[in-house]
Image 1 (tube, rainbow, N blue to C red):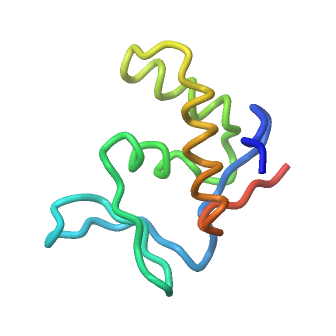
Image 2: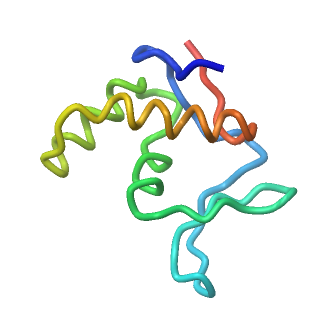
Length: 92
């Protein structure tokens, strides 16, 4: 599977939800079969996956927020990994 394009619009699958896990002290993406523990960057990316912003827009928000440069490929790859697990879907 190739990473999603810049215009792809990511959203969290309805079976998954982002929540804070006090035991682990980090954000996790919960789904019926388990969970994915996220680092701070991963959690920020997932929080921006609202089904409205494109991959390019998610990357632009993070670039502006943190002063990072050229992160679209990293954001796309991260979302591709979650999509491979069925936790992120891409719409128009």
